[in-house]
Length: 212
Image (cartoon, rainbow, N blue to C red; front, side, top):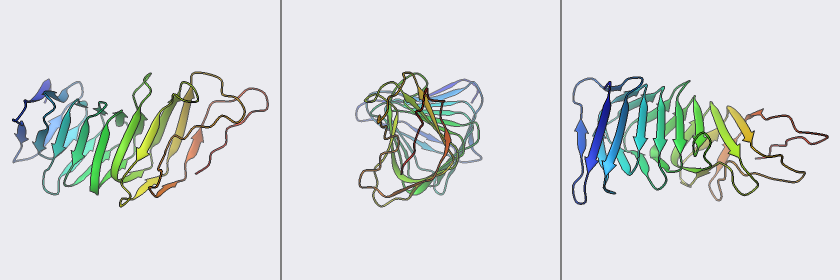
């Protein structure tokens, strides 16, 4: 794909894209997106993405034992769900997963070697991860205030969540002593976090402190 590939679903009708030979390649500068009502669209294909994948309502990717690799940007809008029902999704170095929706992988895996950016650049958001997740890339969180900042919410208590890599904080205000930010909020979900720090310098005697 070198242009715009749009999956259009209406109430009671879902669109399905089948690729039976080879893979669906979304090249740099190109876009795959869904449109229409709140109905879910389906993609039955191995996918290689170097452009933009924009999920506005809901997309289910269900290629049996599929492989989905991205060096481009995957954006999931608020209330939207990108569901990987078979196979693994890998965001490679240079790839970005962003938005305020939900990525569902369940018993399958999401591997991130690129950047996870809740919300999006310049937009605060909460990105929900439902399913096995392994991160060795960068988690990028913008901090607008003590109550308005980017978050990742792992929600599936039966899944494995491992966060290595780097946590990069981008504050747009000057935090004060004792301010706290829960960027990865597992709640009752078991997660493992061991990240390197990429934090801006603080003024005076203030320093950042990471806990998990």
